[in-house]
Image (tube, rainbow, N blue to C red; front, side):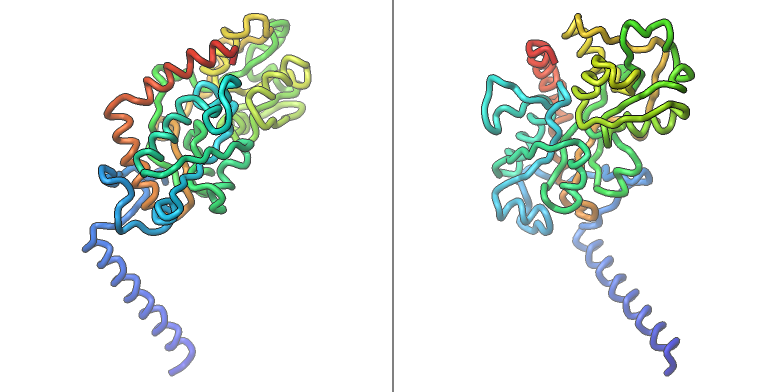
Length: 307
């Protein structure tokens, strides 16, 4: 038999093995898939905690007794630091309550691992952390790197993202066209960075910052002339800091397509069983309207802290 024949034989053998594995998975009811938008939207029964037959990350979490969650803790009301608290308890916000709920459902200890947003997804991709919970919107490039859950938070009347400027520039920056000779900024690795690339095609310079607070500070200090921001949190910041001197440009809004809306949890690429489990927990959260309660409480505390 020639080399070509041996190659075909190997391919056929591999196809038979794959078919056998797939058939066995079907028989066991364990076929994990992503939908056409490349995020996981089906769920696992989580009423008994991590199942006995768990494998991959679920097994590792159960055996270690620890769930490691990466987050960038400077995005109120989803995640922020409460200076009145210490250690792990200092990480507060709706997403942190969600992380605690997931750990409780799993029956393990939660370890929140703070880091820059640009490091959150790589930490999950390389297995340093099990999950990323950090107000993550769906971005196709993210779905290429990690597994994404179904959406768990859809802000009512979400205004999308917009352009933040200094109040003194209200007459000279009134739209995207006025940014052609300006320095603009956004948080690195954020949805707003992606939206800037899509909608702001002409600018003098584009600067990236590790947190939203750094974006606000750079604008106030004149380091940038405008910034792409999430409108909701920016409105809250302006309201909670009446002397900040910042404002949103009227009539400028960058919206997401419907299928991309909703904050999501990220897990390691290929570990679909873990994401099915996470979706099962999210089903409980949504059925009991828990996230709405958590974010309401977090908004009050963030306002008290001037965030």
